[in-house]
Image 1 (cartoon, rainbow, N blue to C red):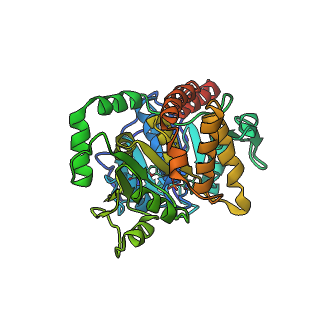
Image 2 (image 1 turned 90 degrees about the vertical axis):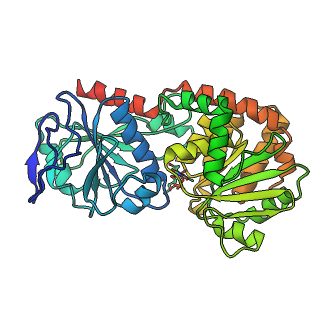
Image 3 (image 1 turned 90 degrees about the horizontal axis):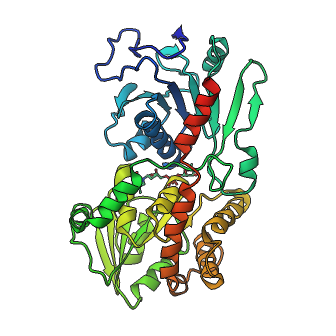
Length: 413
Ligand code: TRH
């Protein structure tokens, strides 16, 4: 049974593991910093930890919070945070304490309750931790961070509260969204400047291409497409269309769930990072999975981005380029209304023919209809304008980390 601490702020040093001397590189809290515990259970893929890691870093670097991130799958985490040591139960990266959440009852070596407790995506907090929250002199702000949806009901449910059935605790539901009245989506303060610097620098672009693909940057006649997707029955047809297109296409494929299908198309045994292949007008490069900053650069280096799930979907919007979304598939096609809700926000102001072409292609990529690249890429200039305008509209909601921090602070007063 871990010792219990329940200070108004978590006190330093954090580590009081049974035999341990405090880890030298664990961050020490500033006296008045808001302490936050963020719990993340990885269901599958990278979106759960992708969102939590991004949020943890923003709360730390932009809001000065002292964040402890509990994660149950360090291997998935390490894919997008190569600095992580999967053998360590507790470590600090980028000023954030990372606890390997070994089992549902585990709460770290010391039971400390933070000022703000975030359970991501409905993961269940350890019972002992909830009991300690109730015993804390001042109850923490308890937030359930939900999955992103662009549907209308989200604004009604954002910030709704639910009293605990047993303890004098209240949980608030925090909903990301694409519309006013929601929590918005994550966006770092430095992001636009980083993108602008990349786009303005031919040297940065050239260096990126050489480092990432081993090849020089392609000329202006080439259309560059990034492809991050789940297994997709429409892929073969699309690869065929690209290989027969009038103009050259370069495809950038981060190694992952679609790699085997790409390999099959090119008649290769695999399409592991570092592989290259070509057919007709299509040339493809397999990329190593990078950290999240590296993934942003991939989006900026491409003219069209195929993205999936939640976090890469958001990043494609900030990249302000035309994109295609492979939404996380749910049973009974429950994802399709979510796809249409996102389309309504993103494509709404487009002229009707372009809006229809975008809708047809997004649907085809999500299993409804056949993808037609010529039909989709025809209004490319309109999509480019719309992508830039949408990124500005979306930024008008404020970013999720800022919205969440503002709400939590208002509750702590
Ligand atoms: O991996 P995903 O399919 O995650 C999904 C969704 O989040 C979905 O909503 C959730 O229900 C399900 O998991 C369990 O897609 P997503 O959300 O885009 O997450 C991928 C993360 O990986 C994102 O943070 C970007 C990052 N990434 C890198 O850091 N480097 C890379 O090279 C690539 C390709 C991605």
